Image 1: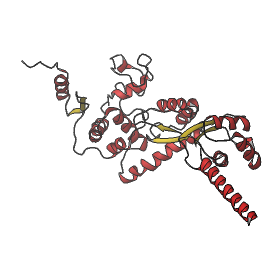
Image 2: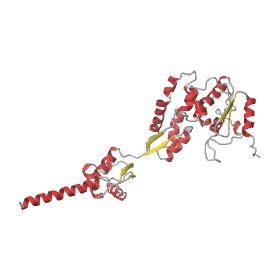
Image 3: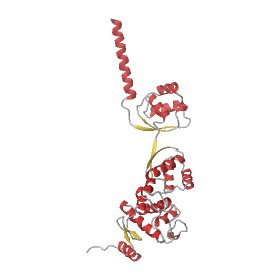
Image 4: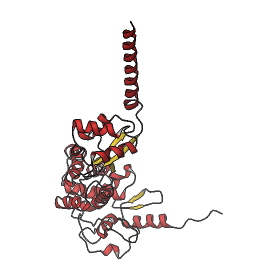
Length: 326
């Protein structure tokens, strides 16, 4: 009887200890934290840093499990998202399987040119900017890097980054060409859409602005679009940005095939990566819209006119100094 009681007591202690260990190592996981494994880092060093960050409880248990199940070479270098107070075996499996890889969020804004995308990719250490731009230029992909939010791991090959962006373009934009047939080529549609993207702020104006440029293009009138000049000028060191503000008459004379003040017809290609709405605006412009001019008012919208005389009157009216009420 005494032996039986000792046996039951031992079992109870064992079960309570096991329950405590399970709770300590698997329950109440803490906040998510980013952990970096450096190239060539030893298992012992990884274990100590995991402990320091509160991800594991015991560096010794981690090293033993790592030795039994694999080796430090199986812990690939990179960034990983891990929760604090996680069992060592779960940490090892998560890192080895790649399920815990840390992904950087990249938001490509509508109207960005490829250089702006490249700079953001480099800033987030996703891929090499020069390699990315080399692929884009070699394949003439300006306009086909669809503006969206992407998740990439650090040091992703530039080819893969380009592939994901162009795949999103194929998914979102390509169907529009089948749904809304046009005599324009895909490159021509994207070129006009990219100009519309840089001009418009409100979605409801995109079909109107597209109609203006289409009207001018059809009658052989120069587009005279400021964004094409901004594109031709490139990076402005004084403003520390692309898309220079406040173009001067000297700027409008820049010798570039993208300068639509000097050259008739469309520029060689898109000047940025347009949104779905801008492409749709070109494929479905406002019908029976005979305007050839527009000017920005003081509310971020535009005033349209069919003749140059009316256009000049609109400019004078908008830019006239406001009179203070008596």
